[in-house]
Image (spheres, rainbow, N blue to C red):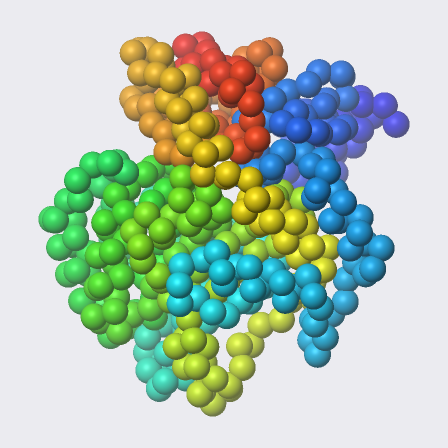
Length: 426
Ligand SMILES: *Cc1c(COP(=O)(O)O)cnc(C)c1O
């Protein structure tokens, strides 16, 4: 089949993310990817500024990851995880316990980020049920968050961005506090901490957990906040018998300049979710980790098991690639790599600050953002950056990049120049 036929079939049959059916905008047809480049059917090559939704931290076709996948496929691609276990999953759990903040000891492997949030919520609700406090079922979060597209995660996404009005009566109604004040470097605002304290105290009797994205709110708006708010949440939740869940699906594995965003605050949550970059962008896998206190609570219950078990739980191919990806992360000086990207993003995006219509330019670790005073024309932006040999996927008023950690300086400069061009032209 040639490219035209494939795209015609795609438009007729294939549903794309956040898209109408039939599709209105023709997607780019990708045939291969290697290093930081996507190869298109028409022969063009684009530098990937998105790391395939923040996952492909080592770039594409990395020889070590390819080898891990092939080798594991030669042993077994999958076996059920009920009653059976295997080395790739055991090694992965052990490594995650090592890498994550101290105190998280138990690992539930699952299929995707959204499912890991479902599992985290289930852990928290079941914990309170087990210890005889069934009324503690609600969640508190701050506005501006994103936690996935299945129903319980949707209920803690930003209520406006998550279009809660559409789902009134269907979504569980959670408690929302204002979004944290902007700025990783800005001094923490005590009056905001007072708001958190008042709301957590007021709702403590009905709250199972507070759930937030630490330091970076990703798909909800690419906003950064001071790690001090995480310390405040840790103290407040502990004081009021509420569990604390960190969603590190976007921030985990070095993206913000620390291995986990929680490390910026030196805080251990009761439950932590990872996903996205876990397998270096090769396969879908996520995990929810918890403390012994949470696990023990559940095990003391009427139903002393965590009632969850996806068919493809602990998939050996995904676990083997995750092990190889985490191995690369530990062998390489990832912190220096992210610091290099941080410097490149600052320098490359600085010219955008003085453009008309640019509201803010910000970066943290390997995340760079230009915010406009208007929604980005996405098809026009895609064209402008593709003409410069770059792939980006802006949303709302945000032009952003989360490049692979291996992105060379000159490719990063091409990406940032393309972002500035979008701010000027679209
Ligand atoms: C992407 C993301 C999710 C959802 O993960 P999926 O794998 O897409 O289900 C949840 N939380 C955050 C912070 C994310 O960035």
